[in-house]
Image (tube, rainbow, N blue to C red):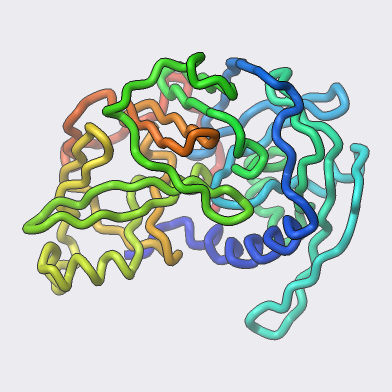
Length: 312
């Protein structure tokens, strides 16, 4: 079964190609502060993490999306000072040409922490659907935070942002090795699928996607070859999934539309997440060590979950 975020995934390949080309001109700068620590509240709307961003003394709403490059709305593009405005062209699979503006934003602040010279795409008809639906001004990707540590505490709707590991209490047993993929620094971590044998899967933590675990077709084929999953079992749940200390039972079998397996924001229903971009560690601190997804009904990310129109 394909997940319901296909509309987002269709454009990811194009965005990655654009951003890879963009980053060849130079890396995205990290914060200009040598040491920083801050905490701030976020909103959780339609399974998306919405954070406050300050540009030129004005506050805007951005989606925190580790799965795609940073994007700003066309309206915001017209309001703010930008540098290095250039147009990138991509040849789509149907032989049509897609054009996107690539800009550099001199300074973006997250809860007072400044980030200099952030590279961003400007929305167009392809990119604007989600921004419009969520009524936000842009999205922040992983590349801007690749020298930072970000901790998400869903029961408090709180994010901690720092470059000092000692500022955030973490346990070694909650850690998995983190790989930063490509120029976007997409966070990939490892989990284990436990059946007759054990299979490891490298998973993208994509905060722009809903849902929990979406397995890649490549990894699903491996599970079938090792007879961990029956080929005919359409409604068969996943075997045990182990992430650090947490065990997930009876996870629905959902395949990813991308080459890499993904884990979406539903992970935040079950624990705190820390992405240590700086030291390349991924931490999952579960609320419960054993999670039976067959027993789960309606789960909310926090008591202050806000309702909104369903977005793609």
